[in-house]
Every structure is written in C-alpha cells, then in structure tokens.
Amino acid sequence: MELYERTLDLFFPKRCPVCDDIVNEPGKLICDECREELKLIGDPYCLKCGRPVRDPAMRLCELCREKEEKYRFVKGRAVFEYDDVLKESIYRFKYGGRKEYGEYYAKVMAEALGDQILSWQPQAFIPIPLHKRRYNVRGYNQASVIAEKLSEILGIPVREDILIRSENTRKQKELSVSQRENNLKKALKIKHYDVKLKNIVLVDDIYTTGSTIDVAAACLIDKGAENIYYSVIGAAAV
Ligand SMILES: [Zn+2]
Ligand SMILES: [Zn+2]
Image 1 (cartoon, rainbow, N blue to C red):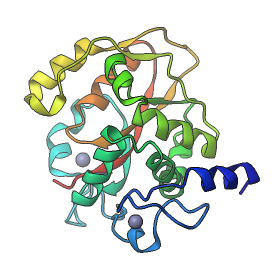
Image 2 (image 1 turned 135 degrees about the vertical axis):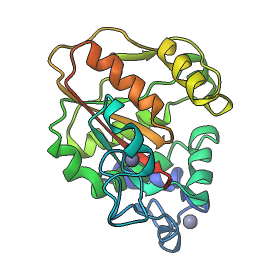
Image 3 (image 1 turned 180 degrees about the vertical axis):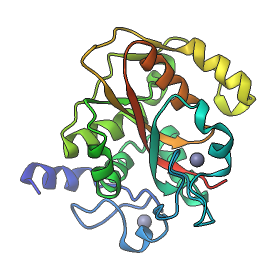
C-alpha cells in the first residue's frame, strides 16, 4: 500500500460495509468477522442473469426460462446474494453517504468475476446513470464508484459520456413492471455513441427485474453495440 493511502486511512478510516463500524486495521475494507456475512454467489447460478438458483439441475432461473429469448443483453453476473445483510449495506451505500463501501465491493467483484468479465473482451464499462437531481442529492452515483474502482483493477476504461438519464424517473420500486419499462425507455438515452465499442459491460449495484439493464442494453445495441454484458454487486434468488 502506498504511503499516501496509508496516511489517508489514518485521517479517513474506512467503515465496514456490513456493520458500518470503523475498520481499525489500515488497508482493510471490512472486518474479518463481517466478511462471512455476505454470501458470494457460487454454483449453481443462472447462466443468463447470474442469480443464485437452488436446483443444480437448472441452467436458468425461473424468470429467465420465461424471458431468456427476449433479453437484449447477452448475460451478466452478480457477486453476492441479495439478502437482508446486503440490502442494508447497499441502502447505506446509496443513500447514507457511504461511498467508501464501493471500494470493497469493486475489489471483491474483480476477485470473483474479473476473469469472466475480461473473457467478454469489453472495450468499456458503462455505469447505469443516475439523474442529475438525484446525483446532486447523493453526491455520487454508486454504479460509477464501482465502475471506476473496477476499471483501476482490470484496466478497462469507464465511459460515462455515452448513456445518460434524461429525466427524473419516479422511484422504480413504486411502479409495476410494465410502468418501470415505459418509464425507463423514456429516461435512458444515448448522448453520442462511440462506434468502436462493440462489447460493453454495464455496471450497477443490484439486479432486480433486469429491466434497467435490459433497456440500457437495447439503447446501446440500437446505436451499434454488439454484445452487452453486466456486472452487479447483488442479485436475489427467485
Ligand atoms: Zn464489520
Ligand atoms: Zn436468470
């Protein structure tokens, strides 16, 4: 670790993404005992969306068995199971000013999924954008924080100048699935597309219904992208 980072740690000690206490050991991003609290998604997982699946004989989760052909993205992976522990952590990461959690999440994402992500041969990471008004309230976009750190580790550039969120969409969780999709189709737009980009990895915090990722994928494909993948911190089993 660089001296500069060590010094920073002394002044701005990191908080643990699980218990939110200050992690006392410099250079550490999570308490040893809290590390076990987050469940890494291992086999079996859905080969399309990356959710954990309970039955090892199942190649796809229940939702993807119905929708697989309709998705515009190729596939995606998630690091952790989206359970109550992760849910609370992500909430603080997004709304509680705990930007620092992003460093831990990106690091584990690189360790767990780095080889897979690189095997997709992406030319760019694109974080799912946040509307400006929300950005101004929070001070950062959690997806960008992850993408930037992941970029530092894996050496793939982050492009935030391509996909934009044009209007302040209502909170997605208050809407039905079809309302969500319509809302998003209006909101996500391509500012200007870079024709050199063929394979893109979208980066976001959680994968829920998949509609955000899929609308983003559709926007990019319509402009000439070929293969859209994604990498997220969490996805829930169905
Ligand atoms: Zn802890
Ligand atoms: Zn699935």
